[in-house]
Length: 272
Image 1 (cartoon, rainbow, N blue to C red):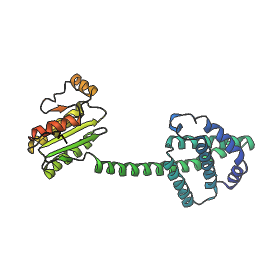
Image 2: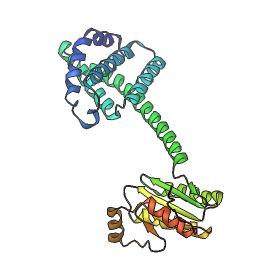
Image 3: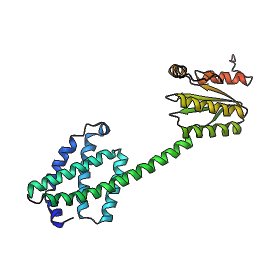
Image 4: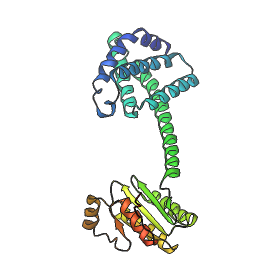
């Protein structure tokens, strides 16, 4: 950036900051900032604008390191990328407007220099923000896959697979693998698939469940679907989904009782 323009930005720093803070306050009430307290919001804005001014006097590598470090903090605090990009747009506008008012006759020169400066910062921020989120998402996805749909033995030859959350095609494959591996490993004769924690059962989810039960049958075990809530039952009927090939129960307790009967056992109360 031109040395004179850099000096002018520093000279009018206070005015630029005040104008910028007024503008960003206008979208303070938007949904994605509702959970951030006023104190954190104001302090973070101050740190943000201070970081922008510091980039004026640093080498390119130092600028990247400074922005990347600050971006990591914003991600940890849960600040959305949309706020950052809008904030930079408002900062560019506040800087240009201030310099034009203070230094008439050099509008085009100011605009181009400031445009190049803020564009570089936007590129670094967006690139680092996107890369960090992608890495975080990948790690979370891998962790979820490791914890997803375990087959839990509860009695000899009886196992339970609790399903929680949305089931997509990729997760259905993981469920199938865990189910078949677990049936063989635990020598299960009866498997209870518990869908209590599945928020929506549509045609695709039902199809995956039917496939899983068929796979269990092919390896010599039986399958019981448990956790059928009234709203889920109504959805299944309305969609015309046929679950008649294997037993269904409304609760895990009833499912275990049925599984015990299938293995010629029952729970008996003993008088003391």
